[in-house]
Image 1: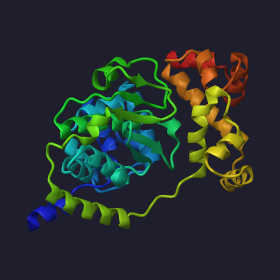
Image 2 (image 1 turned 60 degrees about the horizontal axis):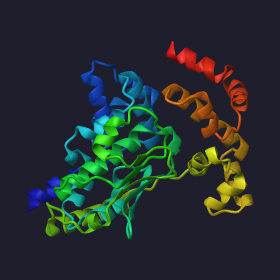
Image 3 (image 1 turned 60 degrees about the vertical axis):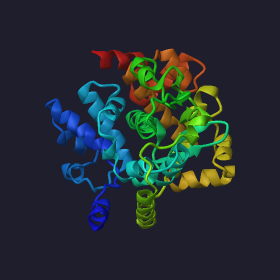
Image 4 (image 1 turned 90 degrees about the vertical axis):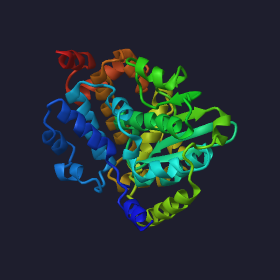
Length: 344
């Protein structure tokens, strides 16, 4: 028993699993890792240390760079299909030793910060059963690969611990994706939505009461005590108000509702407090909105799946001309010029 507890103490609770898997993929393809790590403010020592915590923002940047180097637009999804799920570490064992799927999902929501500082999971219960994922301290619009990785892992874990080939009744992603969705449909089923207002996975309500095939109440009690201790001793990262505002703005842009008063209302602050908190980070709402639109425009153009008119709509412009003028002000060239250059 003492040996078992010693092994428990060595189970990884750190973030960075996806970064390490991406490094393995780059190595397997004969690609240099360190230049990409430097661009993402990471070091090889961090990657090699399984106990090191990797900043979520840096991880997202590295995954974007790795996907471009590998020419794999579905990198996060592909990485999630490969590993032994035990590589997730302590969190996996907590879920796999729970008694029911409902209990497992509740514990995933409670302890997810042990493996990722930037995502908060919420167990959905009632007429629906599932998991919602929300970004904190990092802008959601920067990411596609990490969120697709974790949603894929969620479905894989659900199948493994239940012993059943479960299909979600609905999977939603907040980011846009118009192409390369056939592989997703094979895993997730047909009820797949991109460009949604939230990131979540919903299963039939009856799944909540399914027993976990590997349930072990004795092991689970030990793991929960260890997790609670790790959670209590982990220093919480500060949350940027800017990222909270950006995450609220993006879903509202296409609908013309991305106004300061509406965002303040969603975040539960007065307009005056909203402006003051942005000012404390050296920003105004108009500056944040302009910068966010520029970042999104460059990403959408680089992905190549959306037409210029679709991009204009997603950014909240009623006319393509207004978007083109704004983009030229930001970058010195039109959206079509940039897309032509990227394709060349």
